Length: 169
Image (cartoon, rainbow, N blue to C red; front, side):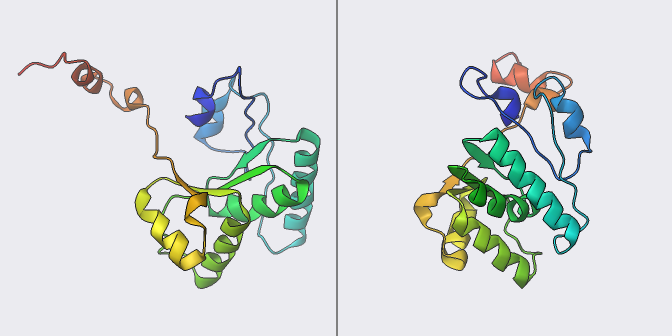
């Protein structure tokens, strides 16, 4: 939704993914020119180093002003390369309370968050954990609540009608 609704007069969005598969790619056709993939088989092998080097080169060639990650694996893959490539604004994301992450995953994610320009959260309740458990400066944690195109889920137009007062008892 973010890429679909950005003002193209002010922004030229690009999408990069680890694996080039899934329904989102189909949804983005015609909205971005090319979606490069940087497939990983694991984080701790030669393939990961190759893909990191490719991604670093991609960043150096394209010189983005902002890089924003949207999940744990993207945070871990993107943040080191983006920082080394000199991207001015690097944003990580936290969209859950991380209750199923291992101690090592939490430590790695915290390391990434501390190296980012800011951490985007989708619920205010996540802020206190990032500040107290990960040592993130509260001024670098920004709450951006999830957006949802309700028309995609409202085949009968009920939500639209309710919004504009068309529903009657």
